[in-house]
Image (cartoon, rainbow, N blue to C red; front, side, top):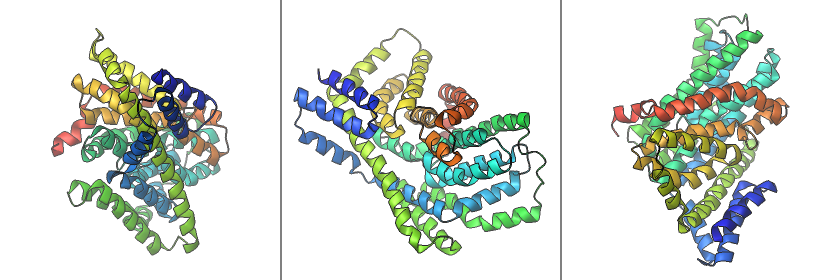
Length: 426
C-alpha cells in the first residue's frame, strides 16, 4: 500500500505540473502518513541529513563561480580566444561555441549555467552571421550539457556522495568522454553547416590576433589549471577547490573591471535560486529514496535483474534505455539520487566499475538536458533564441542521436572513461 501510494501520488503530481522536488517530497509524506511505518519527523531528519554534507558545499560554490564568470566578462574572453583560432573553419561559430562550452564547463560544473553564459553570447552572434536560428539554439542546447561531464561536475559530485565513490576518480573519468563529445558535436555541426552554407568565407585570424586574444584570456584559461591541478596534485579537496574557484573568478572579475558593484546582489540572487533548487531536490529525492529502501525496492529490483537468464550486455542495454527515458522526465540530480543506489549494486555485482557507471549515468543525464519535456537546456536555449521548445528540440535531434550512440559506446567500452583513472593510479 505504501509503495503504491508513493508511486501513484508522485506520477499524479507530476502530471498536474508540480515541480519534481515538491512532487517527491509530498508523495513521501503521503506514503508515510498512510503506512505509519516511521514517524513524520523521520522525513525532516532525512532531509536535513541529506544536505548536511561537507562535500555538498562544493555545489553552491561552483554555482557562484559560474555566475561570477558569466557577469564578469570571463566567458566573453573565452569566446574571443576560441574565435581567433577556429572562427574561420567550416561552421566556425559553432566550433567557437563548442570550445567555449568545453572550457566554461571546466569552470562552472553546470549544464544550464553553461548554456546561459555561452549561449547568451553565441546564439545571437550566430543568428547575426546567418546561421539558422534553430541550428544555433540546437547546438548550444546539446553542447551546454557537456558542463556536467567535464569536471568539475555538480552531478558527478552528487553521484560520488550518493554511492560513496571517489569524486577525484569520477572527475578524471569524465575528461576523455567530455572532450570526445565536443568533437562529435562539432563533426555533426560541420556537416550541417557545410550542407546549408553556414559560416563560409570567414577570414582567418593572424597569429598576432590570436596572440592578443590568448593574452586577454590568459588568466581565465589558467583557472582550470589552478582548480583541477590543485585537486589532482593533492593540494586541496574538490570542496576546497570550489572555494578557490570562487576566489579566483572574483579576483579576475575585479581585475577586468567588467563587473559593477550593483550587480553583486543580482549574482548572489541567481546563486541562491540555483543552489536552493538543487539542494531542495537533493533533500526531497533523498527522502523518497530512503522510503524506497525501507520498502526493499532496490533489493527487489537488484535481485530481479541479477536473476534474469540473459547476458550482462542485455541488462546494461535495458538500463541505458531506462536512464534515457527517466532523463526525459526527471531532473538530473533527482534521477541520480533515486536510481544510483538501485542500479550501482546491480552493475558492480556483474563486474562493472562504479566510476565507469557514474560516467555512463552522467552522459545519459546530459542527453536528458536536451530532450523534452523537461530538457533544462532546451528551455534556456529557447528563451535566448526566441524559438519554441518544439523547434529547438527538432534542431537538437541530430546531435541527440549521435550522443545516444556515444552513450552506448561509453557503456560497452570502459577504457574510454577509465583510461585516465587507471593511468594515474586509482
